[in-house]
Image (cartoon, rainbow, N blue to C red; front, side):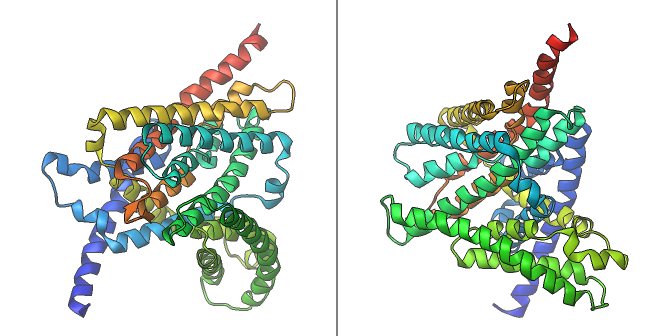
Length: 418
């Protein structure tokens, strides 16, 4: 490619990036003012920009295929999962309690099974991997959205909240394992293995578990030593640079192992603990979460806007697509109500637990986004119509959770008021 062509490509891409960043912030502000998570505003801005052609405005159509923006979105997704990992407490992950673990397991298995059933019923000609991707998209509860709703309701310190948040963190990890397995099966299928490869499936599961285990153990061992040497450097930005490099290295190793890069990014975040880089804090550096904040607030919205851009509203003119979205939404909501059966403690409202697990978010969108980019026999695993329906379901689950959770808590408190 000629230098002039590269310059033109960069010039267009940076203008698109400027538009996306400003649009994401305006959308986040608008939704935040009505009590909704900013991520919904970013998605809606993407949907709006991606469907301006319905009004005869086609100038933004190239955004969907812009390679630079796609790379920026992938980096945003990697940094997002790294940030989620950094904010996760490893001891808390390992000690979420039996109730949280059972709630998380049921909250993965039930939506996965229901999603696969609905997909197979309405799209019998599609690959079984498509059904698996649809079900997998419904598995993970959004930790961030759930925590925000509980905090806004003033219920963050209740027993139900502790179980919900512990389960949400745990099912994020399980959801990432499901993603690793499903993406690995798609890779196997592209090599000509169209039947269900049980041995290959078990190997992918084992590989994903081994990767996360070794990444955490080895990462904790090496990160302490790396920071011990790095603290001798006085150049500005050493801590942030090492952390992001560590994230990218583990993401790259995960990709080379046949897993999704975000699995490695999440593992890198979980590994990092404040005690490892305490010498940096003692000399006046900020915590990793604070250092990441300016970067993620710019990079992550690009991912969500591009997810929204890929939603084609024309698909919802079809009753079949609307019916599919409605049934998948029902599967997503009912699947999480099974979670209440996993609560072992007495005096806990199981309805509150089930409702609190409803909102999907980052991992679900990443799952759907990956399914839209992976291909089988030259066709995407998730067609544009199916992808659009899944994004709509994820958004709907987030919109419904605050009022439903408020009603569930009020129902829980009525007997006490008497």
